[in-house]
Amino acid sequence: MTGFGFPLHHFGAPHVVGVISLIVLAVTIFARYSRQLAGSWRWIYVVTAMIALYLNVFVGVVQAFQKMPALNALAPTQTEPPFKLTQLVVLAFFVLLTIVAAIRFRPEPIRAV
Image 1 (cartoon, rainbow, N blue to C red):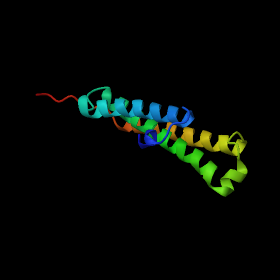
Image 2 (image 1 turned 90 degrees about the vertical axis):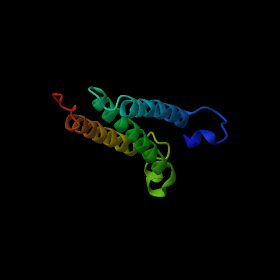
Image 3 (image 1 turned 30 degrees about the horizontal axis):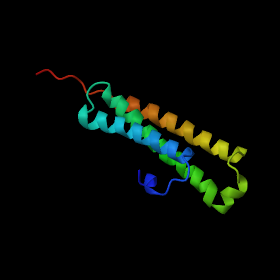
Image 4 (image 1 turned 90 degrees about the horizontal axis):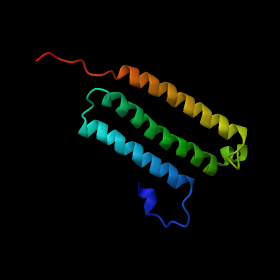
């Protein structure tokens, strides 16, 4: 959110990712605090938290390829295969991690009163 405080010359891809991340985080916060992870809100919380984390890592990979000379030499325009492969591996890892997390973070069993 702090990135929106900088001067805005044009609305670009980083801003789109930031807006999507804020929307996803709003759902995550709603699931955690307003719904207190009741019922299906548990898996919604897990999935949205993982999406928010993935978006941060996605931006981190983009930044790494822009700012690190060795990575920038491999993919200077970020359309080359090394960049695309890295992003694909990161995406696949997060999809797998999200599935495992959603399965392990099961709904709370209903207790008899």
